[in-house]
Length: 331
Image (cartoon, rainbow, N blue to C red; front, side):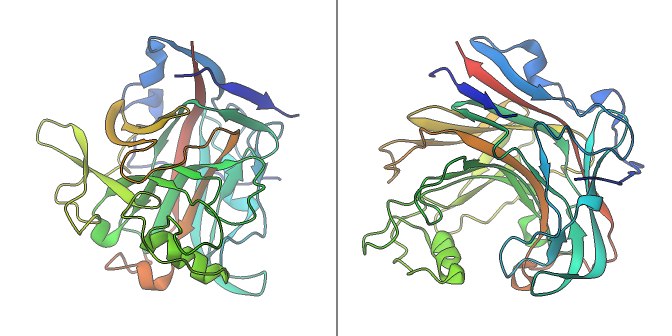
């Protein structure tokens, strides 16, 4: 894997979190995969979220978004008061039920979004986040750790690429996590390599909608499941990429979610175990990003039509607890 290049260029929060029922002491329930300094990897950058209770994450590295939305269908308004350190070495994104006026309309939830755009970015490497995810039984819950291009000159998503290190959904998705790569060749041609899932995003944005000819190469969400031996693996039954028969509750303790990315491939891991792989020239993938990406950590509330059997809403507030973020470079 090629060595990564890191650029560090260089909101207020009031959350005080309660963590009853989950282990946040001693970083406890899964090994710190990278604490063993994997062979051929060298630590490039990290944030362990040290600071007093209620403080925002380091503003030299992170931007806390406030009064921000992300698309017309999601139900949350991102607020700075939903983001803060807990004083014990964790960043906490709190999602709450609230009726609040935001850009253009009222929202039913408040939640947290932080990102390193314009502050920390890298090309290639191993990117990992150790986190406790929110209660998967909460109505519409949708936590994510994802990478986006720092300088997107392509003018339309997903041209330029999006690497989702981890997304998780409740309801029929059955406590799974997903690793996803979104991409497209260009904005207008009829032979657009965009999946059905990606095409729906285009349609919602008002852009020309290309035919869904990708065959899951650019925008397919791959889920993990646990086997009796505790191993994670990708499940992608023919014609039903959403099905997961065995699940794991990622809200009961810390887990490490990571990707390894180079010029020809992307691979996804949970607790150091690989479960999904995308390779240039294989299964329709004709593009792997080769430019700097930055990281986003957030918790969304899915559009109502996506809730598919999740909870009633009484589960809130819920918390997305991040222990650390690390970027490693290959030697």
